[in-house]
Image (tube, rainbow, N blue to C red; front, side):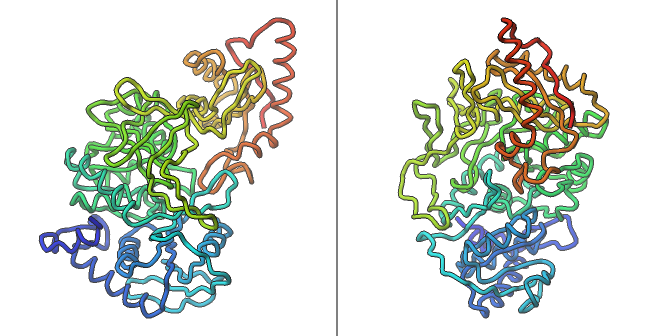
Length: 504
């Protein structure tokens, strides 16, 4: 069932859908606003419509209007750099852009809608053929930083939203707070759409109220204040948001009491951080998903939580692991990438490495493309070690490297400027005790700046650019490896405490 079908249900006509803000909406008022906007869109003859809108009721109204006309939707997250926005618009041959504020660089808006949105008709320089059935193009920042367009069909998106509905219903989650940008597929489909299908109310505050700062920053106090204000039953968090929430509570803030479900996704979460959150009374469940699958693929069962796992495949999902440990999806619903031939494979390699536990829960190790092979021939996923390091309260960011080397090294960003290098050294030693010997850290470089504050080291959504990080810290890392090689020649292995390169 689509959210349009659900909202058109006569029994839902006067039910509150958007609550808690300056603009509250019932199903009827939402549909009326969407119908008004769709009439304006139809008059412009658009076929591919991009949205660049802050979270709020107008985002949902635009979403519904585009669906009513069966146009191709291209949601753009607000953290995209202007160059990435321009690339996405051109790559998808977008002919209409909907914004919530003027963009003078685009010229004059063709018109301003009744709900306060600005419509920009865009020239299309070259036609771009889409895979048949494409209803939405989501752009993800890969490790190159250049957004890549993923083409998805309406049926796939509806199946994902519907597959999550039973969990929300079973937990009595009747109010969902959207904290992630609605231009991100995870919040749009697994959050907003699924909540509507479950009959839940939506809280849609501006992103300025949620504590999120761009693509990779978060204010834990503001995040907690937002949750306390709206009293939701469910939220979706990124791992760094969970870390910030836990830190705020540990520093004396009152923990939220309304929450029944905190779904954590977007990146791997260390088992220690999940345990830490649960010890604080937070009802966290870890999930796993990909843009190419329409977002969520697996989610933990609250009755069967597995340490370090991401749960079992959702209804309708088929997942297998090959002999090399790579996770594959069967019929993921992925239609193809922009500018590439349509996808015809029934089985699709995710690029993630993992294994099943005895209860059928999926456990992830990291990205196959990031795999390091040490000089001792051991395979190590740096993502896994980085997540373990970042689970330590003194460590904000970590980059792990060591391909073809005897020992791994790390570049760290401390959680606080007041954290001494000796404390960081001790933190790494503590993490090393939880790791097998081949995955332990032999030395560290301290960076005075966050990786996302140094140009070129992260993508727009905060992913590490590993080659660029290696180049940026090459001198310090080589100093560490030279010391370790000399130690190895003398027959010594790295000490319990890692060696330290000079700080940046």
